[in-house]
Amino acid sequence: MTPEKLFELANHSGGTLYIMCVLLLLALTVIIERTLFLSKMQQSGDELIALLHDSSELQAASMQEGLRKHADLPHISLFEASLLEPEESARDTCAGHLEEALMREVPLLDRSLWMLDTVITLAPLLGLFGTIIGMFGAFSVLGDIQNAASQVTGGIAEALIATAFGLLIAMIGLVFFNGLSTKIRAIVHQLDILKLMLLNRRFGTHAPLHARPQLKVV
Image (tube, rainbow, N blue to C red):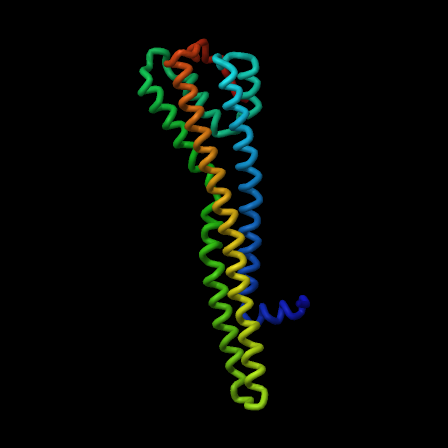
């Protein structure tokens, strides 16, 4: 299909194909940005978990280097909350403060995903709307008895492209929306693991996480 034909179809759709192109661009932007951001965050979170697993002291050189390297991660808020917790705090009190720090970070993970969710819902509706507008043009030629049949069927076929394009955008968006949601759940699971590891090392059999508050994450 030539570009000229595509522009003709877009014009006959009442402009809805142009709007859907904007929706597709918006969806791809959100998909690329969130995929890169969450993938990097998930990988860095695994590194922090491995560091904490291998080190019983937050003041260890390897642990300090890891915290500085990943200072922009939401995971760091758990370490900061643990370091600021008074030594006489009970486990439940400390767990509550760590949970509070965790919950403050979770909303940042699904930022912009509402736009992708909106595109998934709106694109098929716009496609259907464009098809209906195209149908009006297709049936407007019924006065030409000789060519009406061919013109109507051709017009209907062209009008259905809007619906197909809307469904295509929704399918692409849905696949990546589910993938990004899975990554977010994995990162939240990382945060829960870190919370438990910090609690276990402070109140369990591991060496306590005291000798603070020299940690400065920069």
